Image (cartoon, rainbow, N blue to C red; front, top):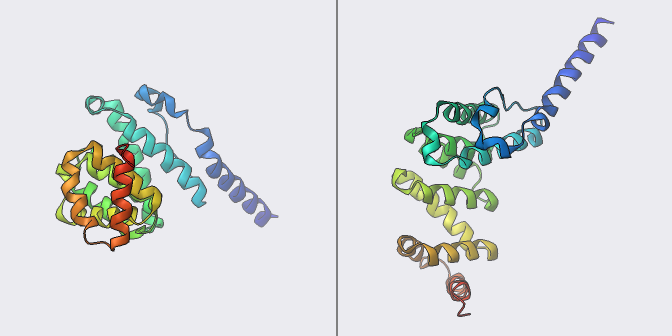
Length: 212
């Protein structure tokens, strides 16, 4: 009887944890940081539950502008997301997306060392995850001056990964056109790739410029 009761309690707690992400306030309320002041961003044992929380945190963390970060309430929300990402990678160190969320939160909190370590870990644990690599590149380019030498190397690996796919090369081509400072760096990377990939990249750039 006692065993059944304990099992029932454990199951109930597990279910409550799994449902926690669905009870989080709508992300649109991110513009009012105080609305998230009491939010725990709790998650369950499943990878899906963790992904839901990390997805919310990623959008929330990057949703604030630079001036917002002087607000203590905003910093508290971002710090909570950083803590939750850390909680996840402690038990699942291969969770590349959680490492990315940790990197994003650290960047917003001006924790430069944590930002670089987390960004590198995200690339190391998810070197072939293109959807995460795209976010990593965006984050790295946003905080380019804060990148360490090892983080620059990690981003170069992500750029090579993106340049090897049709969708990825389109994204890189768009950044090539919109960001002059990016051109020399990506050109140096593409030049070391097989000729067929170089041709695809050039065609994608021309197409993005309306010349293809």
